[in-house]
Amino acid sequence: MSMKTNITEQEIHQKYYNEIFSLMEQEPFAQFLGMKLIHMGEGTATAELDIKDHMLNAHGTVHGAIIFSLADYVFAAASNSYGKTSVGLSTNVNFMAPGKVGMRLIAKAVEEKRNNRTGWYKIRVESDGELLATMDALVYRKNHYFVPVE
Image (cartoon, rainbow, N blue to C red):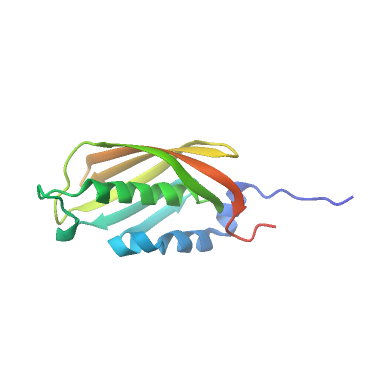
């Protein structure tokens, strides 16, 4: 009879933190846009993006796709923070105020609840304390771990 120890998701997060953070930090699309992952905890993440001219829409404000991308990036980092492959199922974004060139946008994702198969997240995108957008997001959690869990 073999004794199998079950490692918790919190232990996986702690044990493989550097590998998980590095993978999320080096996400190609985030790199392309200039996003910086500045924090990742258990089910949480924070990233920032400095707005450049090429990120604006025809009205001279930050394109909604840029704001969405930053919110989606922290959603991905937060939901994958346990080393378990997690993919987005749905998001709902509310745009509340325009962003402008030169602003630094900061997005924060917080896990509301998770179980074996799904996770729910709330994301806020702000600049200088002003709320620009919120996102509610649902993730599907696969069986696969992308870190070497025994």
